[in-house]
Image (cartoon, rainbow, N blue to C red):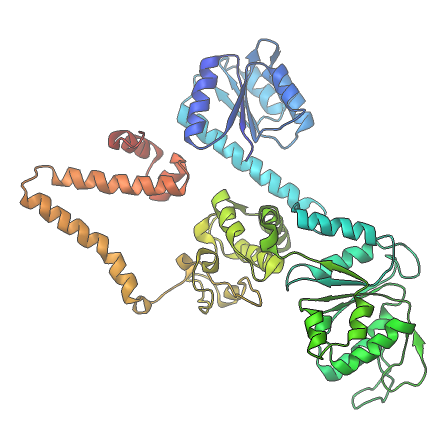
Length: 509
C-alpha cells in the first residue's frame, strides 16, 4: 500500500500524526508546504492526502483542487484550526473526503484516515473492475517472454504448438495469437473456433472436426459443417492435441499437408483456409516414443513451440492476478469487490497452484461468494491453501443454502474446501486430538491457579487475569500486524479499552 501524505507547516502536527499512523502500521511521508507536494506528485502518489488548510506558500483548498485535477479518486482530508463555515464548505465543494477541525482527537483522526484508506482501496478495485479486461496479465520474466513471442508471431500465420500445464492459459494465448494475426485470408477478422479433442468421445470427434453428410450414420438427419469449415478464414484451436485418437491423427495430418478434407460420408473434397494452433499439457516427444502420437504429425505441428510457465514459476504475478480476478468475479456477480490483505496474498503466493491460473480464478470466485467480510484475511482462504486436507469432501456452510456450497474453487489436481470457520462440523466429528488440544491450556491454567493458591499468593486473580489478557491482545496484534483498532474489533472490546490495557500490561515496550 502507498504511504499517507501529511502536509502541514506545523512540525509538531506532522510528528504526532506520523507516530500515531506508524503504530497502526501505516507508512507516511510528510511535507511542510503545498509546493513540495505538487512536485512529488510527478513521481509518486499517496494512498490518502491529509493537508492543513492554511500554510505559507499556498492554501490547502488550492492544493485540493490541483491534486483532484490529477488524481480524482484520491481521498483528501482537510485539517484546519479555523473552524468556520466557509472553510468547511470550500473543502467539501472541492471534493474533500472529510473536514477535520483542530485541535483533533488523535484516535478519531487515525480512524478517519483509516476510513479514507478503505475508500481509496475500494476506488482502486472499482477502477480495475471497470477497466476493459486485458487479454493476459503478467510481469514475471517468463510471461514477458510469452508476450514478446506473441508479438513476433503476430506477423505471420505459422502453425504454433502451445505447451503448458492444465489451467495455465493456453487458450488465452491462442486467442491472443488470433487477435493479433495479420488481417488477411486467415487473419484476426476471421472466426476463432476452439475444440478440446480430449473432451469429445472418439466416435464423435471425427464428425466434430470434419462435419458429416446427411445419412452418413444413424442419427445424421442433416448435413453438418465441421470445425474446419466453421474456422475457414480464421483460426482453429485444437486443445489437448496429445489425446487425439491415432487414426484421426492421420486425417488431421492430411488437412495440414494439403488443406483438403472430406466430411464423414462425403465424396467431394473440401478446402479450408485455416490457421491451426494446437495445445497440450503432455510431453508429445514421449507420446511419439510410446507409439501413441504420429511423429510426422508432431513435426507438422511443432513449427513454432510456445511454452507457458506454470503459476508457481511466476509467483510475483499472483497478487495482481488475485486482485483482478476478485474484481472480475464481483462484476460478474453484481456485488462490491472484496479486498485482500497482504498476509492473505503472501499465503496465496506461497501456494503451488496445481491447477494454475484457472485454479486461482476459481478460488477468487469462491472467495467473492463465501468470504464472510469485505476484507479477505488468511483465515478466509480455503484449507488447501493453509496446509489443510484438500481431499476432504466439502461440507455445506452453516448458514448458506445448499446451492452455494457448490461454488468451491476447483482444479483437476486439488479440489478446494470451505474455510474451517464456516463449516458446520458436528461435535461428534471432532477428533480426539483436537478435543485434547482444546483442553490442554485450560488444564494448564487450573494447575497454575492451584500452584499459586497453595503457595498463598494474595494476587492470584490479578496475576492470571493480566497474563490471560496479555496473551489475547498480543495474539490479536500479531494477526492485525499491530493495528490496534482492528485488534480491538476482533476481540470484541472498545478501542479505548485496548489502548488502556496495552499501557497497563506494558505491551508498548
